[in-house]
Image (tube, rainbow, N blue to C red):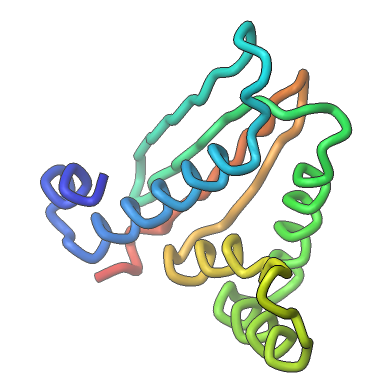
Length: 143
């Protein structure tokens, strides 16, 4: 993914950011998706660009009772409550440092890191047994 993005985009930093965001969203989709039903087990990736912005969307199937969807929406809303993704990232790092997570507990840092390191806004939709996560990168500030 990284090689493709760097080859397509003249801005190396922007290409690296797009590749990181895309890779992380795909990894989350594969990890948390419901792949048990072959009739709807589809992974979709869409990358669109216009006016200095790139939108990366990843869609995957979920079960209706999956707690990951609620956690996803809650985390994105939490990130949006901060003035910047960097502020959210710092706050989450401080929370992790203050908690005794143990080795098996999830850090729930992934989406915050995507927003911060990818310089993007995150959004998500859950409908009809699928979840779609979109990261919108502002390419005008990567240089």
